[in-house]
Length: 256
Image (cartoon, rainbow, N blue to C red; front, side):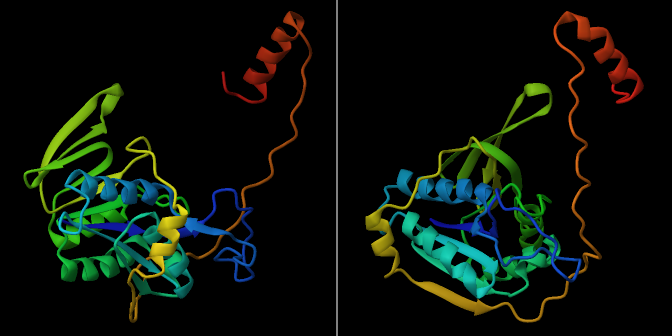
């Protein structure tokens, strides 16, 4: 079984975001880059599917696929150290600015060539939070798609998945492969790279391709940081402050 985990290089979630001089992007000079956390669930799911099939050379292949700048090879090397068999970097220096349609199209072009049995994506990236790329990949390839899965089993050419439904319910689906699944927190606990994996990653293939000319349909006109929050106020202490607190919540904050 051939499984592809789609990976995105994103700023670390504790990054202090600064708007760049152009006013339409972030200043990346002090940014630490990581694998998108939701994509870590996708990679771990891919590894577990392979392991459930026996884990040997003949049981399957896990490929990490990324649209990103040349520097994203670092994140892909991490994927290889964690356990992916090979990686493909589709080089695009402006990948972090690409809209979901263009990103999905570039990835789908490679996926159409690879013809994987299963495509796994994070449910969204933590930088743009759009949650569209996995769905658009499925649409481009004409494949079934289930989003935000919290459980996965693969057997006999189909995937059995669960996802959260309305009002706390759980939805269960059986999907014929090939298919696209997007992964949610709680699906698994991603593993870390160990020393053996880090050493092995140096010998694993990391292919680089040129994304070519990409044109976004959606353009960012400007970015600005949210206004600073007003300082907090202590109304009083104990039960005697309740009346004033209720009055302020009603008259000033207007939340009750």
